[in-house]
Image (cartoon, rainbow, N blue to C red):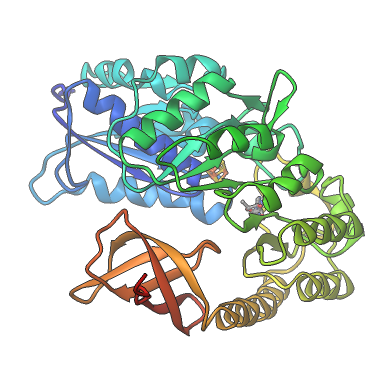
Length: 439
Ligand code: 5AD
Ligand code: SF4
């Protein structure tokens, strides 16, 4: 068999969550530090597919992508590396099913990507799905490229074992990165132009170091010069500590936005999901957060069609959505994941029932999202400009409530500008730069 030469160019394609986006950026930085340069997926010598295993559809994408990659018009064959949660869950099985794959590397082992790629370039199949989290961060090179908004992983893994979820198996146990490591990375990101940092973790609000919690970290970041905005995601309702709730009313740079998944509005289903909170305890947290920060935008995740979910259970989900009034929310049809307890539960819900429920839930969520957006029309707010829009002179940025706002402006990407919100749709807003009053 011909072995591919050592790659000179690479392309990283990330699927799934924001942590994968972060991991993808760090893999790119690592490969750049090794002297490779970025290229399109159509002609890169090395293509890294940074995969998601959360639902079946996400996992299946890997194989269709591999199929496309090996049918290049010019006949060239890239080294294909499968990274991320599918790599962790399926390991060497991936290379058996798709022999064109040269590297399989899990989320806790990607700091070893260069050696694995070298092995693959020598003709071997290199598989590394080791789990220890800490060595990865120590081994990675410093941060390099960065725009105005940056992700920063502070916590990884999950000990909660919700019965539907693969994350505890693919990302491993809950691990918090140490305080000083996180602060150093934040400073480096700010030096490279980051105005907004989103702290990431599968259970980000469970972050801790020597008795200090996420709110202490947020308070310390609030004091970093040059940083304008702090966000964090994703949180578990049981880990919403008093200090964190209070921070929403006290810390100026902490944005008024909270993604707090509840998954279902039925206590019976929450129990079967092993969520370890109730609808009542969830609503109480929401109430306290709103008391601390009345204008907070709330976001959530929902699963419909969990095994045993009745019409009544589903109606209860609609009711908790109505009670919470979300600014946005994600909803998914339950997808049995191999190896999780729910996959073998009785009473799997027929697909057509789950589909119908998903449609009803999404219609309600969309209506709430539109209502939230419409309620901000007429407000003057700051917007962090992130990217260019479709029209000449148009830029797109985010409001404090994480809404996308389109505006014509002479300001530059990375600027924080005052904007009057003029119009609202379900997914974005239109605005105009506020006319500055003469002093
Ligand atoms: N099926 C459907 N949705 C799921 N999620 C997690 N596991 C599954 C599954 N097996 C959803 C949850 C979680 C979000 C990231 O994905 O709502 O909060
Ligand atoms: Fe996908 Fe979850 Fe893994 Fe993120 S942590 S890549 S969402 S399975």
